[in-house]
Length: 277
Image (cartoon, rainbow, N blue to C red):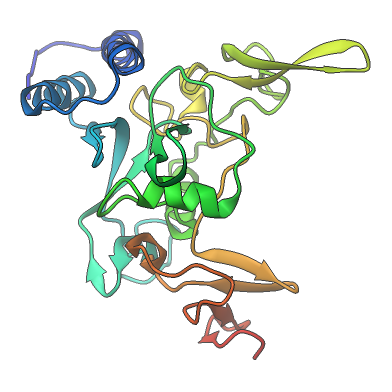
């Protein structure tokens, strides 16, 4: 990883990672999947260098690139003060504690269809919408081992991390802008008409200001607040009962169907029991 001594401004940091990610997006949109090992290595190095190790670009089984944010292992005590000194559930998959989890930096697009559908995390794309849970799950898991639909456990870990930092990310929650700070806007990617008036429905992924990332930096997870509805795995509501697949086991390509025996209900004291108990 390169290192250049001296002070950095957010603008300088943003410029380098922005230009690198835009170049990656353009390469993929014009040339398709990146299957050459040397070219993959080059993009990995460029993203790591531009983000100072905070972001990674990974390639799925077809060679589709996705920009990811690495979250190092956190304990429950690291997140809400007073928590237990044990790994947060997001880092436990089928009994194995993971040193980090990787979260899509951007709301995904989907390339291909059916068994060839693959979710992809790239900057300045119009996020995929009007997609049901099963299709979203397949588009993530079909990418290969380790790839999965973001889970509720992971979403909770990111939310708690934001809370710990005292930072609430803003986003497109009011027709292309943030309702609390209307001067913050993204680049429109979709308009719709209502009562003869045109409104901004969506903005390009990662096109908002730094306050729209989870940590207020150029290397954070963008658009957690607003823009489009997102599915998460490992949690559901059935007749008003909260049910989960324990820990982060939903990340392990397990059965998340309605009939799956992996679902557990949560008693008021936090005990996990069979649904309907």
